[in-house]
Amino acid sequence: MDKKKPIEQLAERYKQLEFLIPEIEKAAAAIIDSYSKGGKVLVCGNGGSASDADHIVGELMKSFEQKRPLKQEIQTELKKIAGERGVYLATNLQQGLPAISLNAHSALISAVANDIDATVVYAQQVAGYGNSGDVLIGLSTSGNSQNVIDALAVAKAKGVVTIGMTGKTGGKMKDVCDILINVPETRTAFVQELHLPVYHTICMMVEDYFF
Image (cartoon, rainbow, N blue to C red):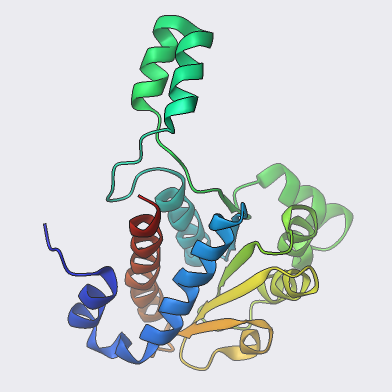
């Protein structure tokens, strides 16, 4: 296995992203700080970026590249509570890093869209889930997705750290992001192609810190 740090691997493999290394490091540090204080990560996007939001949650909520055994005290309790099945759970479950994809809740999204406004489907969830010290990652290739912008605005109002992943210009999102990772492309497909190695690197950095 390559022993180089994830950020070094990114710089070697994607030269066009080297200028973003300071912001990527800030994003990883913000997430680490949030988790260290009992916080969580919220993620949202539209279309392909919604898939990316789900992807990020998948890397955080279970093992990515490192082993993540449950804490010993939880393993012990599981064995007491559930006997043989508890042994299986204690052995096979993994320590997760709390993360929620805001585009994954179809019933809630449709209720908000129907009862309030489709542009606030993510903002409403941030209003409910977000606490000071949490992190919200908003993905938009243009940086102009209103539902993501609204979510970021609510997040800032609640003291949630805002990370934006966009294309080259940053769009309107740049005004509501504490940390902006604007990859150097404008075409949707090409922006999304560069978002993937960025968030993989962030997830690896966070996982390496805790596990």
